[in-house]
Length: 70
Image (cartoon, rainbow, N blue to C red; front, side):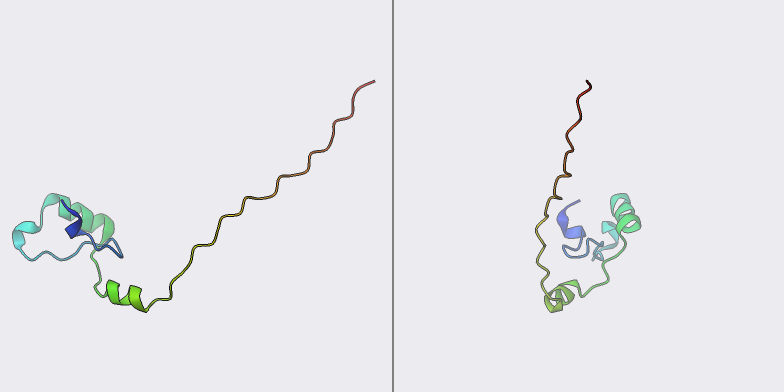
């Protein structure tokens, strides 16, 4: 099953043009992903672009020196 089955935006299953296209594999995808509601490309174009923020590593915890036994 090629990439032409799933919507590239929402990953939902696109409707098939022929009855024979509804295979067992396509049925499983419909159950797991659902159908594409349509209009995804327009919604994506209208949505503001979200720039991913850089991941900042947390600062390391200070290490307290261990007292030596006398």
